[in-house]
Image (cartoon, rainbow, N blue to C red):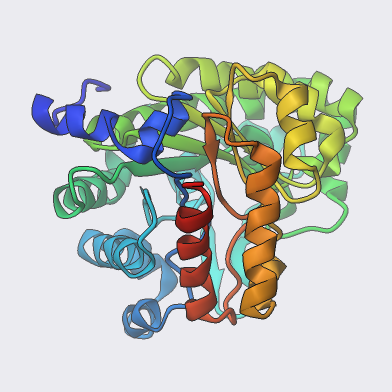
Length: 355
């Protein structure tokens, strides 16, 4: 499954790309970047497509997913594309009834609230039900320039488990932590099924044409270090170690600088960080034998351009020109941001990163 079908000449060009060289901590001509949610509602070109279909139709129609992925990359001039998809559709073949409600986001109609509920969740053994994702990847890879890598992704086990248990977004993760603390056997069974499913899913993305994958632990920041170590770390480590033989993994964790050492222990060739940690201190904590991705506060994009330029410069200065820095926001672009300011970030990074 995981053997790339791309021509050897294309694989070589991709390996020499600015983004992939940074992943491997090799010198580059300027700092590469991509932006989380770079294909999103702030772009008029995205909304022209999105207004014609529902969100799930967009995710499940390969031609449309390809269009918004490639268009956003071209408009911004970033150094990598990221597959347009969502974290949660992998839950559908596992037995989860998922709906995207306009104005509310994802809603799970049959959330897991007990050990008995976990019994009805089964690992994905055949990713064929997710073929729309792999078809989109093949189309995107064919449409991208040969020096622009494609990033795939999946939700990290804790983030997927939390959605599965809470039934949607949460502020305090009461249901998730209740199962985690009170029924560790059920928690472990759920995490194992999520890891096995995400592993197959990511390997299939790589086989279809992704050069790198990111694991999003968007919600693990709600945990204290001892809880992360006990209930999450073994599962993230298992997932990353199952994927890394086939492509580099970006391990992105949001929301808690106290987890940096454990994030590094979990693995990954690139450590993705949010804006709550100074980049230089985080990299020192991780060790310089890994690349780092980040980490400008997304709200900086609302600033006037001279201020925004300085915000970009501040992050680059903390990276000290060391090979292995991939510029990104500390999280994603917001729907009402000015596209011209997002493009300006790209220009500033390429200009200042070359110095």
